[in-house]
Length: 157
Image (tube, rainbow, N blue to C red; front, side):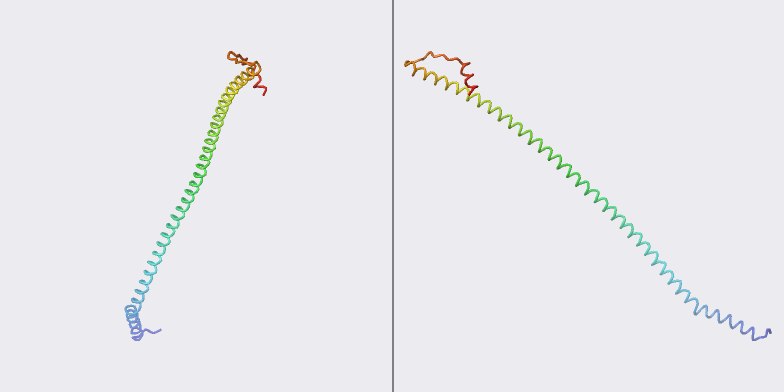
């Protein structure tokens, strides 16, 4: 291999060509590639950020849904429990009211029975006095009757 001036001129021409190509072509292309890489990286980072925000919103929504379901279940169970209490209170009140009315009716019947018995006794007295007057043919004002006999007759009737 010979080293003559052609070789040196070729080497210098190659170096100058490389510098010119680097300055005219490679640097602008590298700049465009770097800008494009930065654009892609920015979009990728922004997409990841949006994805994280979306995931956070989705998680928050799911938590709210779970909370709402728990609240609705609690409201339903509270409503059922309250209705059971109301039902028990109504039953107790109705039972108490009916017992009170039954007791009142029994007391009224007892009072009415006593009044009817007294009226019947008076009627028996008047009837026996009238029968005695008709049989004897005279006015019997001092007529006495046996109250025990009247009570026994009323029990048997």
